Length: 490
Image 1 (cartoon, rainbow, N blue to C red):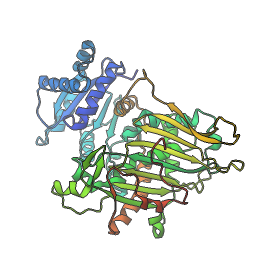
Image 2: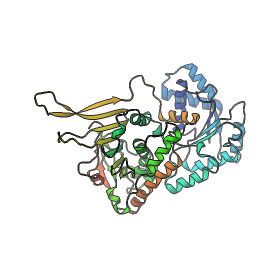
Image 3: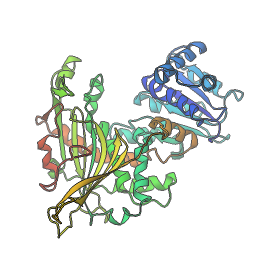
Image 4: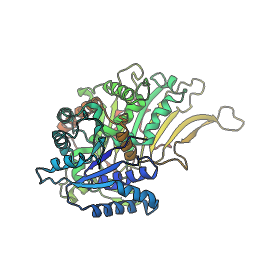
């Protein structure tokens, strides 16, 4: 059980807090994961009286849990919750906030701040917390700050944000979130690799042909047109989530599973990714946009049509499909291409890592290669394709069969990624949060692609919503016999 403390939620009236954070904390309480005396102080810009805030929380929980919870736990959770108005119009707002937190009859010295706010407010809030001695650990207790994604929009802004906050915070106090790292299926990657002795001897360039890291969505940009058109698929998914998946699947075995050792190996492998040669960029990167099509029998508009509907014009170079080819400059992964792709409005939704092994079979030349597919969502599974004999008189008739291992089975505990990460924050476990050197390595890699695409104004390839990968993306593959897996079960 964690030490008792206070979790302060900045942005408590925002969508993330209402849909994920507060219901998530209640679910943790249902699972007896929170200490009895833990307090949750929600901070918003609006003035809300205590009873009204508790009524709002009750509405959140009714929507999420449909009344399926114990009244005892509900009453316990409600007693944990307090609200504080930090009005942006009040120059003394943080002074009043600090005075409230200093009440030792109400709050402990252990305080974690969750900044679920606009990225432009991260540094400003940290400055104010520091000015009012709310980040100082010298008087006992911990002070931690969780910063939501994105940490910068490129390498320059990430460094600027880091320079601003490190004036007040040690690295051990900073929790940079990538919510994918809170997913049980991503945590399972390390267990699959290092708890099964069959994999380590073959986890190298002598045996692996290539790796694909995939995120597909059937959804479009929806109501996020303004955000998405300024961000694009590369920044939104590849810079953070997919590169973290790459790090977990390719890192060396850590000395231990403590946070520092895990992050040390992730940093090493991210910093070992080869820079894409500028004169050969089109052989390594690909982008496209979806146009109108059909998803599950429903006609859906194209990306440019969605922009136009929201008054953002009918022209854009923002990619909704991004694919890149990378190489890692170390002995284990020498010359093994690693392909990353993310897309909206594709034929299926899914996130998975596909590893194709080299076909070294000289006796059965027509045998298919073995594939290992680690599925993150919508199902959590490990899928292995092998060759077996077809029963019958012909000794050498064979086929591909699937060995399917479900990582989540009926009765397993279900914890949301944000719930895991909030527990980690309170427990001081940084292994599932990004070190600043990981952030820098990821932006350094992505910036060169963003710069290239910004200068290159060639018309984007279009793909029909509901279709599979654009055939034009074939250009980034090393050989003709390599292309995207269409799904987990191909």
